[in-house]
Image (cartoon, rainbow, N blue to C red):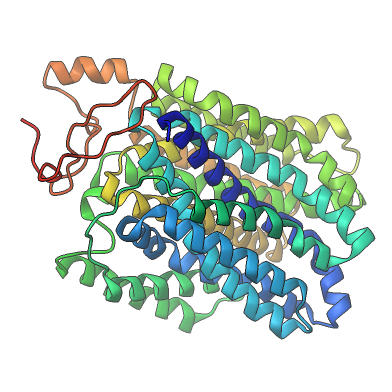
Length: 487
């Protein structure tokens, strides 16, 4: 198969898988009130349809990425997307709320297999220095799904009921899953060992963390203690095992760790703000869900546009300046929304949402590109799993923070100020540690004074130099050359 066509098919599968997951989350949120009435469920039970899914997916993302490194990202992607489609269809036929909760957990397991593979496939198909545009297109598609989700979910729920909403993504998921099985694209696999004890400890840590955050503002001391104990055991195990689930070389690099922190902080500020703004639009301005969704539409539009522009900005100014600017735009947008009152009109909300979308799209593409670009091929799945984990924990943290602040009696404006401060602190502490412009880095490297980590795999996982053709497709290494150091 033509290398360029192979890349296009990989990109199409990656985008479709990411959009199916993003669309499922946004449309189901709109359909939850209808689901509650139809099944005669309590509010806590309906909340568990989201919490159960979130715990399952967040706890398994990194291990799922490791499975992709070992067995091939295309194969794991196909299993994940087909399982996700089957679980969605089963939820649409579920007779009671208990079935919905259980099937949402199953859906979360397959979602965990699917999400890191969408990034792992891109890392395997594209040279590291050409990952920016594919990641930008993927992010832009997620932004479109986020914009279309509430509108499509509201329309389907109003005319066909919540079951139609759940079934919305089944057909595209089945199609892309079958194509991934039938069209066997060349992909590399790596004989990495599966750290099952580390995977279990990480899953326990993340599950306890997500459960603790979703329970806020109620503080669960046993849950928090269990999370801390599991985290300490995980660190101890990963330091001692010969084949850790979390490669030290990936986490110790000058940029990958800060980039994960940037994603977590940016998504926490963003989604915490959206949580508070949604309640303000509906409870204070008395807008219905559709009208409130239309007020937030500028956010999705600017998120798409900024995602497309982010690779160009990163090439010109470096990941550091681009991410800092994006975070400052998020903070400024939050400050503008904090000034809203009962007399606020379209123009008041539009400015804040425009800045939020522009900042978040820029930060998401830039930080994701840094994480995936710096991962060696044999750890691309783990890198994708860590990126997706940050994108799941950040919103959970932001919404929990927003809910806690409102429970303390703060007004919407006052509750938004700590989220603006979070964006500013993330910019100052973490985004400033990302790589600078490559032209300056090349000059420092030639002078022997490169303070940024060079763009190469860590010791023990170094990727050999390989030629690329005009389409940028990487050729497989010659037998016996996989682990040989470059001369």
